[in-house]
Amino acid sequence: MSTLHPTTAGSTVATCAQVAGGRVVGDGSAPVHGVTLDSRAVRQGDLYAALPGANTHGGVFAAAASSAGAAAVLTDALGLEMVEAAGVELPVIVVASPRAVLGAVSAEVYGTRDPALGLIGITGTNGKTTTAYLIASALEALGRSTGLIGTVETRIGQERVKSVRTTPESCDLHRLLAVMRERSIDDCVMEVSSHALALHRVDGVVYDVALFTNLSQDHLDFHADMEDYFAAKASLFTPERARRGIIWLDSPASSRLAEQATIACITVGEGREAVPDYRVDVVGSGPEFVLAGPQGLTLDLRSALPGTFNIENTAMAAVTLLTMGHEAADVQRAILTDPHVPGRMERVTVDHPDAPLAVVDYAHTPDAVRLAVRSLRTPDRGPLVVVLGAGGGRDISKRPTMGAAAAEADVVIVTDDNPRGESAGEIRSAVLAGARAAGTRASVEEVAGRRSAIDRAVEIACAAGPSATIAVVGKGHETGQEIDGVTHPFDDRVELRAALENRLGGTR
Image 1 (cartoon, rainbow, N blue to C red):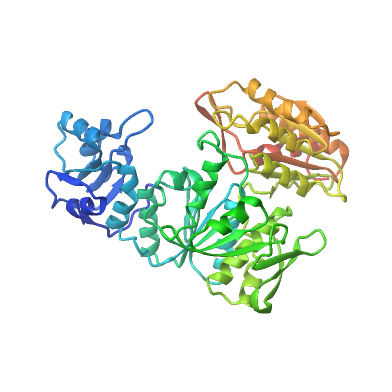
Image 2 (cartoon, rainbow, N blue to C red; image 1 turned 90 degrees about the vertical axis):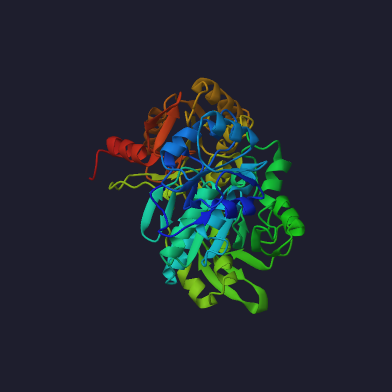
């Protein structure tokens, strides 16, 4: 992503200071051509944002930034002291909270206060990535050039770069928007995480349409509680951040948001909580459904992705396109485009007649695991075997409830996810406790090592025959497994396909 830079961008130190509401120490007339908060990514003429961090203040790296070609520094009073102590002779913009003004300053430098492209921001615990891909693929089917920023990747037209986080830092975000503008991108669809909202990463951006998918337990290692988590999400639905909102209505949290939002919002849902503006009526067990809206509007739609919850994501995508002014007939056609969402109910296939249905999904919250299991455990299929673990260094309270959610399957194999710096065995124990306490008829096994767990799941499913289903959940699109600070190559899709091929012995 650091290789994507606009060809024209610029301001002066004095103008940046004025936007930030800060004072300048040094030459205010110095030109600025970019912004970064990573001293290792500094380019000639950049404003280096030296932010206070949890462990280290960015002022420590001011000398390195200067050597790399930084034109100036944005920091706080402590950072100024560090810059001066290091003998760095650069202009310094001093503010009380540099992170809080970084978005506005970046918008000034990159000229993205109005980036001249449609902006769609999606927040919610689950469904952000899938909904973003659905919207982007439908827009492309309508002949629009699109950008996409999210958990899996950043896309600008046909160029793709692997993402570091769901929502980039504000300086990187504004830089990307400037590149999109230069490349004549029509619309940008992006995921907006609660971290991004709380940490000012989307400051200086006003979305044309903001979407809310749902809210369930996650990120309580970062947020104080569910109320704090909700408040972060709800802040997207204010005039400072968005012009219009679309809310999936069928939950208490979304009903509350619809009442509290300070922008005009459209509601979508099946009518379980309240009467929505756009009603979704599922035909049978799906994936077909009818979307009925104002003034007698009716669209016959179909989810291109497996899982009943993807009907919700598809409906939200369709309403987004309608809200953006696209004709109903065009939306009905475009929404059927298969978006191929990496690691989201992604099928893993092998060329063998007896192969079970095999999917990989990113479900890593109790609610997402439950939805995935319920979508795959259908009466017309055989046993469902689920492989899951839980990440280390994250919200520990959700581990037992993830296990309990998985126990709605026929077989649960508890294994390792990304243990990070924690004991893998202790994490498994917490997930196992929840699965075994759920009181279901599920067979629960513990298998250390994710590759071994996938092999075991394939063994069980293949013994049951082609009507069986395997779901490997938790890591989705990820291509590495983090253990004790080291990320080892590991892709659930690759491992699952290899295990199936080894077990079935190829085409017969």
